[in-house]
Image 1: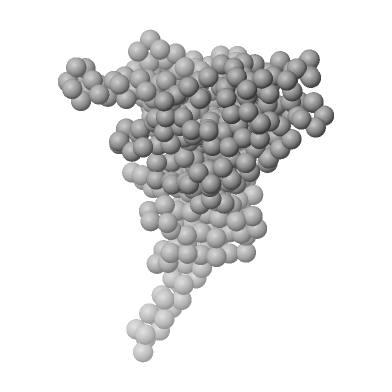
Image 2: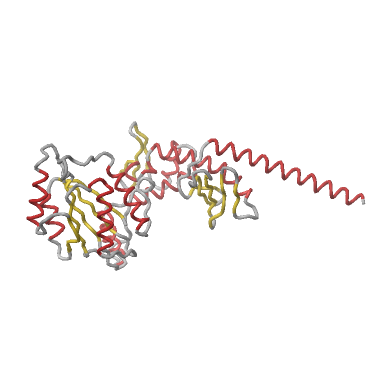
Amino acid sequence: MIGKATKGADFRGLLRYIFSRERSQLLRSNLGQQSILGMQQEFEAICSLNHRVRYPVLHLSLSPHPDDRLSDKQAFDLIENMVKRCGYGDCQWVAARHDDTITPEGKLRPHYHVIVNRVRLTDCRVVSAWKDWQRYEMVLQELREEYNLTKVIDSRDSKHRELTTAQAQRTRQLQQQVDSNQIDCVPNVRLQLQNAIDSAITKVQEVTSLGEILSTVGVTSVVTSRGIKFEKDGIWFAGYQLGKAYTLKSLSERLSQQKLVRTIAPIIAACLVNQTKLVGQHHTAYWEDDQLVLMDNLSSRIKMKAVNQNGYWQSVVLSNLNDTDVRHFLEVDLRRIQTLKEAKKQREKEQSEAELD
């Protein structure tokens, strides 16, 4: 399940948008009225008691994965839990179900709309909006686990910025034109830039060297006082517009982590020869298919997940290594090499004694 939250000032317009649709169904609310006009009047009556609020309307959109199946009762319970945990338990709200969305694969995708009055019934004060999007994501992640719904990467952890709804729709329309031979390809510049940068960053050690590699694939990069931006086919994107992983700060961090990965990963791989898992005092290392995984024993967090491609170790996800980890594994490597040398000397000694006999 994915969610989206927006704020506004027009209860009437949002109510008409949600409940005037052909396949719209009122799911549940804590209002006394069920007509659009009646709900509007109830919302506005409470809202009018706070003259300072500019955006009293909160619109939550919740869209389950096509493979997730929620009954109306489960959906209501989930929505009620989300409203309360996000801090709107003392507010007016109404929830509706829409059945008018179909995935590109042809599957029906019901989704839910929730209108919340941010002015509380109890004291007529407005629920704080400070870092509310973080609160929404945390609560939604908890509810996914509780209701056993398809897991989704938190936007704070996602390194790519996904297409907006309008961009995704436009891409699907272009893909249909490709399928019908009306055009040759789908020009998704954002995705092309993301792929080009991901490929180029594995070949350099400094951000300033990115431009030379990117220029070979028709991409221009410019570092400014405000960050970094990229251009392809006359279209410019600032790094943050491509996603969290493409800002100047994040690119520098990725390169720094890449150096640490390429120092540590070969050592761990050598220690894991002829075994799939190694448990130490501070770390646990193991193979997960062709990926090398390093986990911190104290926090159980994944510190590194890397794969060897063409002789170069590359992170599958953004690693979380530090200099202490590097020093630790360099010491491990020295001990490993010393052990190998001693074993070699012992074999040579035994071979020499055998020849004398």
